[in-house]
Length: 444
Image (cartoon, rainbow, N blue to C red):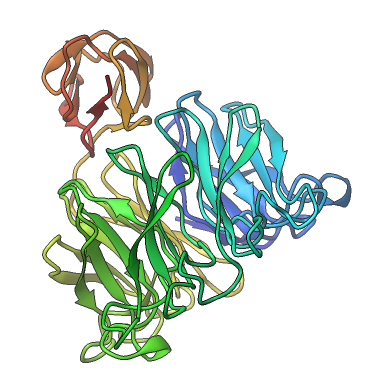
């Protein structure tokens, strides 16, 4: 779908869909300063919107790694893993017109109490603030942080992880957090815990952390090193991946897919490399839930050519290999999360040579609509992405009709109607009735 040549970027990060229906993303390297790029992909191909390290001393950041997040104000927000005045990373905003602004820098004080080296995407929480993780820094020995950043760029440390690998609270959060229906945040650390192989945790907005699970305490059949974050499934459980562990101990395992129930109980639902690695090894990036309510993900290695795979897995743990990477030319070693565009097609990034590419995968799923905000109150304006919106004749929230304004063929705004209940959003267009890929939560 798109290839990178180093001039327009190298090592692409996962993609996100914009209000205009185009795909937006970043590359970790490449560009004229080799600091990475910010790009969009549309009908005319790939366009570079910004080259990082363009400012003096790379104060605008270097090496953006995490996916961009589209927020309720219509802008994208993202992070660079390094760069900035103290080289601890930056937080930036991208407007629909393509203008990039650095709104905050990390590691602005001695010992980096607000964290440094953010490697995962931001999320927008129900309080409209952005939340993210850093793999280093903080005020508890440098084990990383969960931080909050306001739209105005004010950064607050919510929690600091311990800098010792055996810390009970975990160490080195490498994936994003997810907000649950209870308002708390859920995530993982790649290290730390009683066995130093990582943890799963719950964190209140006020900064109180509760440990949900220590990985690899005994035989590592539960997995080890959860570098990915958690996602909230439509069945009410949390799902995640471990890079290693499973049927063997420590790094000897091929990784796992696990489920965490609302009461905090963890269950391994699939083990890679058991008995062989034909289905993949070392699952990388976050899982996503497709419109068919299966989970989709990638493995960095394994498969018939040891170049990685794309898989789907249902909530009970039945895994299907959808694609095996077999050539450096057509892609290898996918290391990031996929996304499902509102056309129904899955899109992801993989290595190819030294620069990387964007691939697409059809699983036979049809078009849908997506609300930018996962929740809202009656009277709140909600942004909805999709296609074919011109001539739309109706929008409803779980069956309750809503007023709306069609902004473009790929974007409309709807007001959450009074009396609506939590459930799916539907948009009736001249050609189809499109349903949202996730339930919209009504807040009171």
